[in-house]
Amino acid sequence: MTAFLLINANPGREAQVVRLLENMREVKEVHLVAGPCDIVAKIEVDNEQEVESCASKVRSDEHVRSITKIVASLGRPKEMDSLKNLEEMVGSAGFVSSEYGGYEITVVDPPTFPWYDVFIFLLNLSFDIWIVRKDESVIILSKTPHE
Image 1: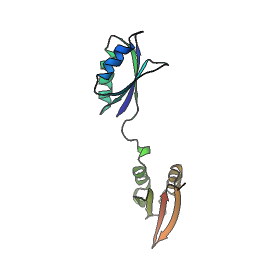
Image 2: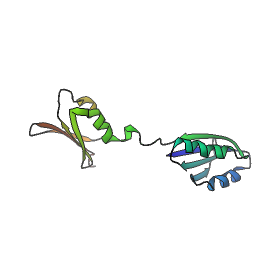
Image 3: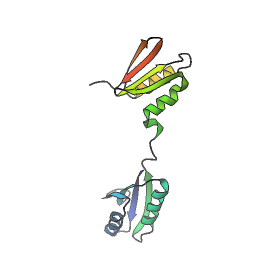
Image 4: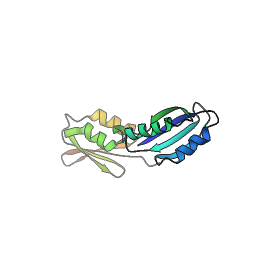
């Protein structure tokens, strides 16, 4: 899990806070910045409890005035897992497989198949879509277009 700590240090004490951060194993990057905070630290941890633990350690330093946590990744969101999303969307009305940089979807129950949702989902991924008949089945083929 990736998170960012936005840290405000006491005036003139930024270097001490940076040294503290550089000595923490969870901290992967540290940047002095201009803006609403003084320091941005990128951390990599296993869970939200470790984000809080890391933030608490930084917050307890006497040179830190305030800290804000931003969790960049809580695992892989369903929206990013296209194959899983398609499988859930199609359900028992078809079969989804990953093929040639896209998807092959075999429609087994046309009346209950979520045609509109599947087409919109694939179009939102900027996929080209073909519909073919193979034996008695309808197959939806999709893949990213060649540019």
